[in-house]
Image (tube, rainbow, N blue to C red; front, side):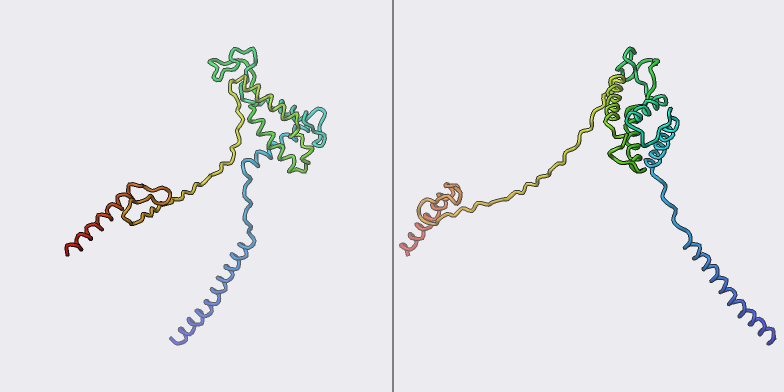
Length: 234
């Protein structure tokens, strides 16, 4: 029995260090794996993704251009050609002048007028491409998307579509900063000083009520007369 119990004690003693070493090994592996893992980068926003797609589309357009164009040789004229090229993919009905529904907001029947890109879509597109051009090494002073010819073209598209569709585009008025004025009210209490004498009272500071002073003087005079009569009787 003693030998059997001694053997079991020895096996337990041998098992404890083995278990501890296994736990330490597993902990070190978990710690090492945690240090090696790095947080995944945040996904790009919807605006950034759209801007990247627009930029790649424009670069592809320059490559397919006849003759091919480089970004350095691109001007405002080429940007306008690109915008007109996109009209074939538009979904906005723009009535021509001869159309009976010219200027109607809700035409009662379909017509054969062409579909084009809406002015708002083109304006937003130019804004994204203008930012992408400078982010990719372009100089602001040579940015073709900010050329005067492009701005004029966008204004003509806006005015033309407003007349054709009967939807006026109103400029957003800039809100002027409002200045809040806090009025501080000061309550000034008037104090009337009334002399105590037998005569008529006078108004206080700033013109008090004369009748109040007169009543006070009369009351004091009556009290004096009563006191004098009492003394004489005694």
